[in-house]
Image (cartoon, rainbow, N blue to C red; front, side):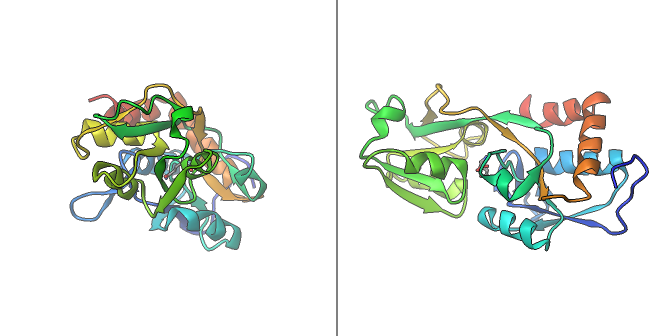
Length: 229
Ligand code: GLN
């Protein structure tokens, strides 16, 4: 089922964990918003299929894909070799990377090596959580969402947060976080992909839509809307 004429005979259920602005989050009235939401809708329109979003915890997304209770997921999920053993990824749609966030008055944390024996907050199930686990002597505190981890840093309960740089920067730049800075040097280079079950009939359709919007300028418009103010 990978020809241009293939149509799913149902509305695809697409999962997202909507606490990650500006990628996926809930607006004032609870409606889903963000770069990934606009992107997924544009992909569906371009490849002529229908979607419905479902909110799931981030660490519930891969199990739900494997159980096929959802058809796809767009949730700023980094394409990793580990995850690719259990799910399939679309072509990359966004370049990100992990950054260390600290309080602006912190003079002693200058990079990854200075995190040893420190308290680090992370969002559970993420690449940031993985990275934090590799720090010698660190006390890692896991939270359900990135904003909760960042809040813990703002409150002075941890020394640092390891999180995707664009998400932490957005929280700082919008004033949602006060007194927080990120260390410019990124810890990793990561690429986000849309995930499906392995051997999903929908993956080629998602890639088709993604290729179309990269070509027709729609991707660029959506990028401008969320990242160039
Ligand atoms: N990109 C990170 C990961 O894939 C974080 C994603 C997220 O918090 N939504 O683990």
